[in-house]
Image (tube, rainbow, N blue to C red; front, side, top):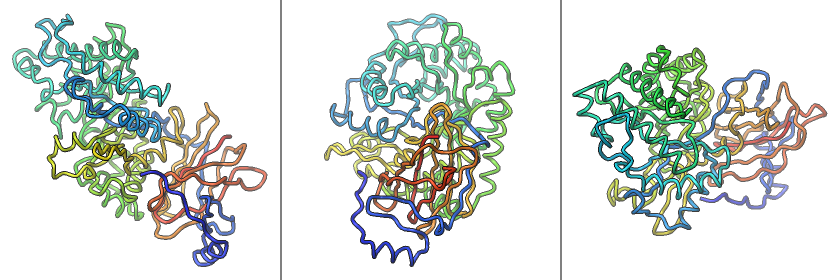
Length: 507
């Protein structure tokens, strides 16, 4: 779904629209500027009131290279287009990567010796060659992909009998499993991973630890973390990445209370299930926060998790969501996920937000779900690939993330913002390293609105640029947005009904 080009609009039509709506108008080139007198919504941005430092946006990154590299479903040209969509257009910078079956059985009986001949590295090398290297060429130094071989008794099935027979050895074997992946990742990609996805719903959802709880997670974190340090790897863990905000908070609180485990944790990961919850279901998002209806229970849970992160000075990462329940190509999907991102950033102070998968193709979809399951029923992946037509589709999730990721880089800070209209949601960011500021505006109203944005604490040095999505238009460039007055700290723009707009400039 490529960005559309707006058709020409007459001056008479523009004037009529302005008089009818009293909220400004949008010109034929996509300019969203409106006169200050027509502003119906006031937005205040306080650049001095900083919240979290942003880490980035990501997804669970499936390479779509199966059979440990022997069954690549994507021809080179289509793979290149899919990678460009994910890392060049949407601009993901984070992702835990499926590295294939690299230890199908325990390498040997000694958890302190890596039996090199027992590891299957073809899949990891294929991932390095066909995913990591081209993604780095697109995303540059901002990219931070890392191994996603979580300690899982359902994936590494050989761990379970060891766990039953000798718990201490089980911890050592789990640590070896993690260390081997980090070392092999370094050898294959040339990068020492900053992170490792140690768990993925360990006690609820995937139930990777099969009845294990917080203490088992603490033991694994300490044992694996110490082993990584012993081999000179500074890699830290994203944990617990549990099924819901509430369950993640409970587990994270226990993990972080242990100083020995806490030293190896880089970020608190969480998911936003159960399915159909206010932040997994597109319908519930649009009918709840999309209509100005706050769910105080959800907000309270997020603030509790936020406060835990503040207590230990650790960032929060929302590392998985899916099951939106609508066609992923629609504007509803885009706007709902943009709202969800806004709320995770605002209420949890999340530093990172992930979609479900980076990309997914029609043949894989048929293999996993059967021929009756449409590719476009697959939800919240960033890019969908239709092999029969050689088409790559950026989804609503992808476009929603892009409205932030294309304007907010690692190291930028989210700063305080407020809106006079509960249907107009605003996120604001400053980036002192690059001298840039940006604002993402979501108009959930059924009519266009003219929005006056006033920035306290900084002044822009030149005209602003932006892009806008509404109806069937995606990321349409805006015309220049002129700053007001001599202070250069305010601007007015018109945002269409049910739209998402990103605007930014230098200061």
